[in-house]
Length: 92
Image 1 (cartoon, one colour):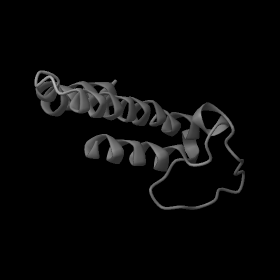
Image 2 (cartoon, helix red, strand yellow; image 1 turned 180 degrees about the vertical axis):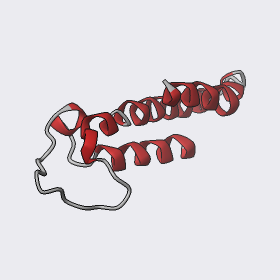
Image 3 (spheres, one colour; image 1 turned 60 degrees about the vertical axis):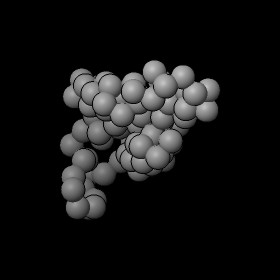
């Protein structure tokens, strides 16, 4: 929910003023930025999939297993991909 709130606030602050300008190129950039930001927010659910394996410093538990649920079904590093999407959203 917090990621969605940040997405909406960011869109209102940075993207909405350009939509009113009416430029077709600006609209395309706005749509791309919105898409990247939404994808970035969706991919942050990877933290939930990690459960007890999530930590700041990389390490292995004795009972460590490869996570294959949530976004990890499709992408090996969804958290990094979410950061890349947010970076692309701010640059669009």
